[in-house]
Length: 161
Image (tube, rainbow, N blue to C red; front, top):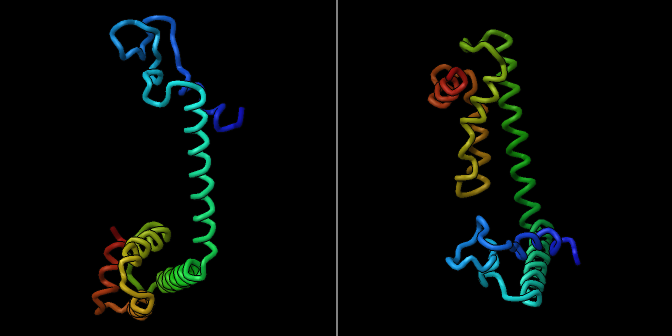
């Protein structure tokens, strides 16, 4: 018996002697919760179901592997790694300005800086294009610490929240 079949067998072959707690029939015929003919009537049907599931799982795993190795996937991964790197630079710039006393943040822990900036960037996946996303990150980077910037005031509010 293969590993998958061993794992699901207790659920497929549940049976009881008389009125079990899982008995859903009224006659006390000894049916367990899964032996009501819903999954299959015999071991051959059970094996066919398991074989079908294994095939579907194998096919899905192959499709996932093909997707992850595609040029588009790799380009998207690189783009979001670049975004994360640039957001990291923003966090470090903000921390540096905070340590120098130039931001006037009312916080008890520098971890609040990362939390607030991460909160500000939660919508990065909502941009229509990679270029728009990178422009937005650059715009934010240029606004850090500028007291008259609407973007900085929003980030500051999130950091101090």
